[in-house]
Image (tube, rainbow, N blue to C red; front, side, top):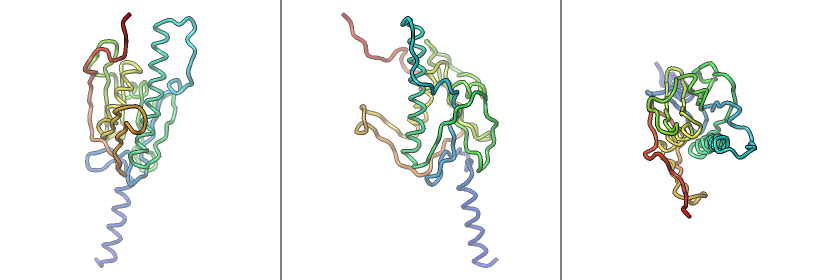
Length: 206
C-alpha cells in the first residue's frame, strides 16, 4: 500500500471515530466541539411558572421542585456547551424515543420520567424521595438521569456535571469553575446514591 493510500485510510478512520457517539468504552457527548447528545425531557417540566392557588404546602413544594428541575435542565445544556463549545439542545417528549445510536442520531440524555421508563427507579430510596440514579448505557447510547422526585432528578444532573469537574463556590460567574474540554465523555455506569444529609437549606428561629 502506498503512502497516499495509508494516509487516506488514516483520515477515514479518524473521521469515523470522531463522528460516532461510542468510543473506547465511553459514551461521547461532544467530540472536537461538536455535540453528539440531545436532552429529552417531558414538556411539563419545562413549562413556565405555575400559580399555586390556596398556597397549600404540598402543592407549593411540588411546584418548587418542578421549577428547580427545569432550571437544572437548563444548567445541563448550558454547562455542557460552556465546557466543550458544543451545542446540546433540549427536546421535549411525552413518550420514550427509540434508541438509535448512530452518527446521525446523537446520544439520548433522558431526564426524569423518560429515564425511569427506560431503566427503572433508583436502587437506593432515601427519606423524602431524594434517592437518585445515573445510568450510562453504551449499547443503547443513552444517559439516564433518574430520581424519586424532581428534586432527586436535579441531584442526578449535578452528579454528572460534578464528575466533569464543574464547581460553584458562590453565585455568579466569579464563583464558577467550569473546565474547558473540546471532547466530553462518560464511562458506562449504573450509579445510585442520595444526599449525605436528610435536609439542606437555610432557616431561622424566632
